[in-house]
Image 1: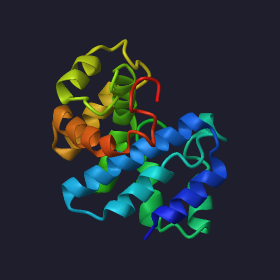
Image 2: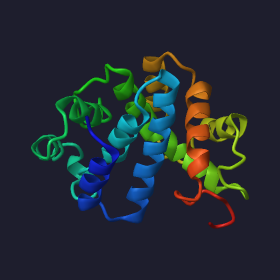
Image 3: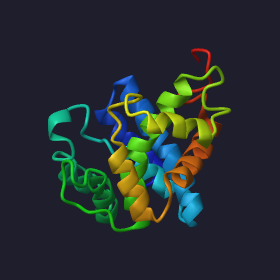
Image 4: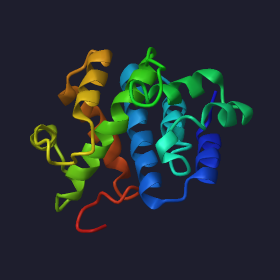
Length: 188
């Protein structure tokens, strides 16, 4: 099983851009909350979340095409590599999310982008962000326009959740780590 220490070692050997590290952390914390929701191994899901964009900085136009072999060679279990590949389903891979972990990663990758953007607009950051406020921004297609809302909704359907339920889990899962991801508000 992939450990968080191993995921950080592998990811950080390939990724140095601050915004990509923040994104990896956001996904990691959201995946931890999703693991708790489904009664799964929190650290394991966080590890997969942290490592999900392993090749993105070096190969943004060939995302996930330079992931499988290096991670398998580094000893990452095949099922964890498959989960990572599945978050690109329909975009840059044909690996369909099947397990709850895969479905969650597919969903929270984009979802955390909108949550982060919402939190950055607020004086207290994510610390007082509620789903109602998130939903107003989610419905505004111009806000965080690069985040694929249809993909998020497809992921929620796969999970049998509403967008509100998934967002609530992720927001609450990210709140304790607001300082680590720069979402305390007031420019912090």
